[in-house]
Image (cartoon, rainbow, N blue to C red; front, side):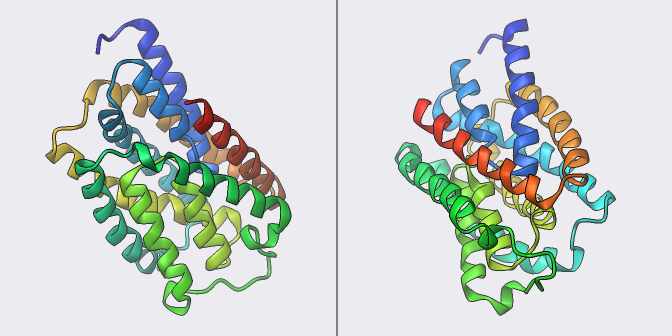
Length: 252
């Protein structure tokens, strides 16, 4: 891949929007992966290289959520256990198996999320006074987090929607706190995935770091917006992003 001013701008701007979208909703990798492939990276290399940006944006986003006291720290470890286990298996599979056949699953998952938000919003956005529960108290939520980890380890695009379904729908967190925990989960299994992809020599560092620079800026701004937004605003932004993710998946 030749590094030019146009490629730097493409990756930086794409990273900014992808980082912001991932921090508040999900689907940002539907922008990042095509941008990397347009610049000549094979699909498996783009999938691996994108994890550099996702890891860095998650670090920035998590620090921001924690600073604004929206991260439920005691819940982090119980929630990370199933996601990291799943993410490790998913990343190993991604390093060994082509991931193109997952596109129908990606589109179906995102479209289902959009329908849930539209038709039954309390599933993804429970009332403010709803008591959240631990993964150990909900077998369905535990397996949902495990599945999100497997999917996220395999192909990052759209995993935020699955995580939000498990955290908000399964464990009854409001969308702001669910996004904070989602960021912690994504950081954990993406870091594991990145190590595995590095071991298989599938990460191209220069485009990855350029993308990461934009992603960190987008994540930083997104947290500031999210902590001031209402639950209703976050819900409708999430709905809009699911539709955009479906369109991006169909186009690319």
